[in-house]
Length: 487
Image (cartoon, rainbow, N blue to C red; front, side, top):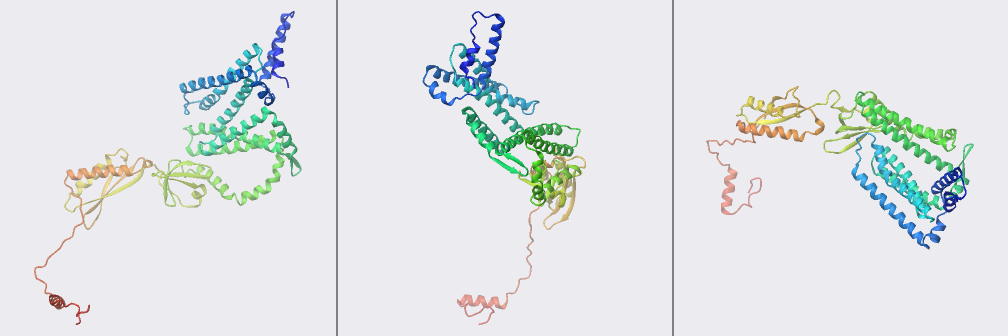
């Protein structure tokens, strides 16, 4: 491989006695060779210790590389602070990608300029060339991580995946720079496996998995973009949007596998070897997953469940926040969430309190004393419920007399809540507090437990046993009488 020094001699040709055309030709060829050499791999390892640390130019090379990294980082930080990303705006992904690769792009540009200066003064750079290669590798890594970030939901697994991809690519970069990668690749190519009538090497398998992962990430990112477009379309039914999003995601993932494998020379007929085992696996171990997947499309198609519906499943009441291909997420008013398999909605009874309408009927019981004005109390209760913004005006709140209890008269107020997903405790408290204030103003009493004690006019005659015990107690002899009154 040509070294940078040999290319620099072409870049600065001896121009004595040459015509203008010859000069232009040599200069063009020299600059082209110079640029290509900057992005070519060289055997750096043997030259670092021998050259970089034994000459002043080597230390200057290191210092300039460090200054370039610091300057590029400062410029990128200033730009990012001035231009924060709005992920709800258009082209948010491109903005995110631009911010991720801004630092290595600045390193690439500044290093390229420094190498031209280095060439002009006749020095041989090593660290600057390494920095140039690392910058372009960093652009590749950060672009890949931006796609993974956009394709995967934000969770611990996606963070782990990004860190793993970055560590793996940087590890391969070190192997590539040192030249060890050729040895490892040759070893993997010689390690072969027989699959049916075909022979696959370890290198082919790993390369195939790599391409499957790359194409699948692109497919997931594309499906997420399409899903965002579908979900923002207001003229389509919400269930239809979710169903189309799931179909697009499934088709793109399958196509990614079918496209990636032929790219590395794997014949798709090889997959037929695993067809029988895969069918048995789906028939037994994966039958629940397949059932939930199909059930998900059924509940989306018949529109029996929609996002925002209030459902009761197996004594758990919550609101549908998400419908996936495998389960439905129910969130209760307390914040707890239940992941209900889609098959449950097909095979079990589910109470959907929002099937025909979003509003939900609620009732509160109040007890007043028998001496209170019942008609006025019912009017106050209706007015207290109607005064709340969250209560529907049609149908209007209504009050009923539901019974005569031991201590008072039982009244009930019924009303419809517009937004049951926001909970009921705060609304109930506001209505009852208003009723309590109005009852006090109108002298309507709340009852409390009462008991009547009647004292008869005729004095009761003491029993013989009581008289006997009193006499013995006066004498101090009570042990001579047993519990039955016998001496």
